[in-house]
Length: 124
Image (cartoon, rainbow, N blue to C red; front, top):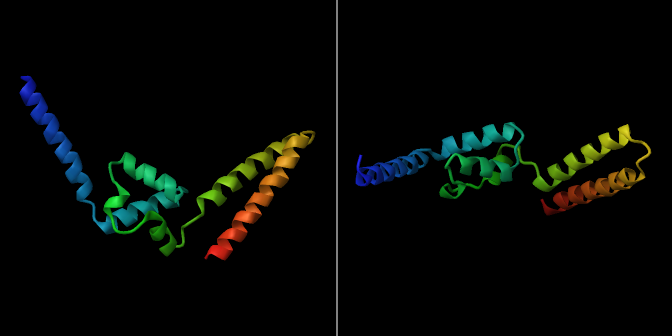
């Protein structure tokens, strides 16, 4: 094949990819967001996953976090990340009772969780 035909076929393939993402309706977009949320992903990670699939959330009217809040699936990403960190340190400390630094980290991170929960209650 000539280089001209290769370029034309590459351009056609790009156009096909763009039209595939525009075929998704708002309801399908919401369904995909809810499915990803049920897998345990936060709004940030859902956006990343959709972009990997060539679906850009900015093309739709609703934000991902708003869709999750309407369906009571929204979890503050800050809170989730700090709670995961707390659980890792807690399991480490249970195995290693002599680790005094882990004890201090455990109490420090627990206070972070408390502050984030308090902030989220006043912000709502």
